[in-house]
Image 1 (tube, rainbow, N blue to C red):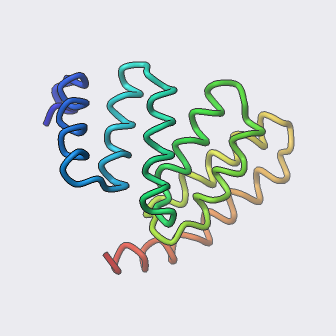
Image 2 (tube, rainbow, N blue to C red; image 1 turned 120 degrees about the horizontal axis):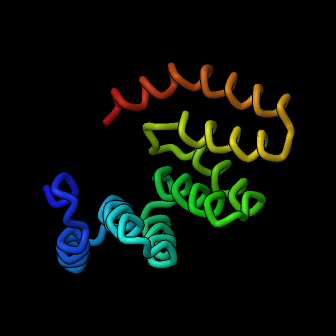
Length: 135
């Protein structure tokens, strides 16, 4: 609700309270989103790492770390995080990680590798649907 209204400060307060009672990877990931909307990228990165510590199979925080590193001008550091997102057992959006890897490769002028990433993304779609049905 707070996100819809753009009240990210209130969302941060709420997510911190929820995490204090019941810490989950998802809670830290939502807190990360609120923090990033407030421009608190280092705190958002920290929340991603906390989410991974709780559930290393949850793919969202790996992708988000990769995106932050790309945006911070550190694309080479982003690649291992994005690769982990593509292999995470619990991730509904593999295409985001493949797309972001493609961004890194395209920026590095490796268009052939970028095309390969897009093909991998297309091949991952049936797997994506199967995993979504498993939740």
